[in-house]
Image (cartoon, rainbow, N blue to C red; front, side, top):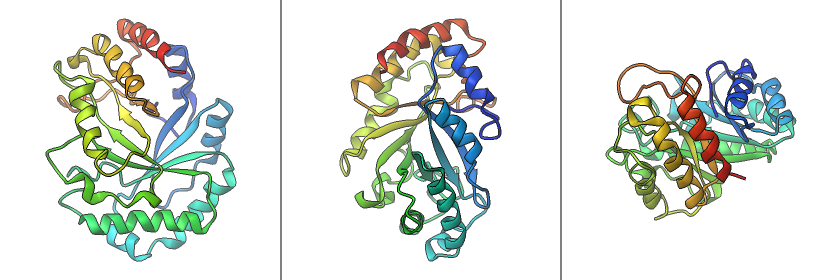
Length: 261
């Protein structure tokens, strides 16, 4: 799961865990270039039985310069910190690049440049023997923007596929949010899939749709689901995604979550 306040504090994770009655197995945070790996947060995650998922966001950084090696020194130092943590870490880089809303994504950066940057990041980590990393190539579930396959860096550079997608409208189901994009992904890889960022908004019928979302993860044998537990405001794409404060949604989540090991 993800909540505001991480990785500066583990308290939001503990509050969510208390609400749903279960410790998450993956805790998501976002990092930017120039930051250090939050080893204290990662150690707390490990102590609670969770794996940290680090989505590296190169905001304000040239993807072309990353690809050319301009940031090798920083990436290698970050890799050293991840390696020295010694426990498993899931890492994504420049996620949802098949959409146009991030400066590293579709219409802003060519697919070839993005792929070279991804490979450079992975290569830098491997050069530092950061072998505790699971590489998560993360796309958006949108199908009406960038060509997904063109951003694929190759099987040797990816361990898992991450798909970000939300139920934002009443007609949304696992089938129309995730299955269609999964079929596209399966045209070029059968790597394990993680729903790497997801939630159901109040306008989509949160409590009623939770069983459908979690059942889909089980039915399609996915690695799991990362719940984005944040209240946003600003239309269909930015709703109150939280479970806390919504008793019927919490009850539905607790019941549906019994299908997970």
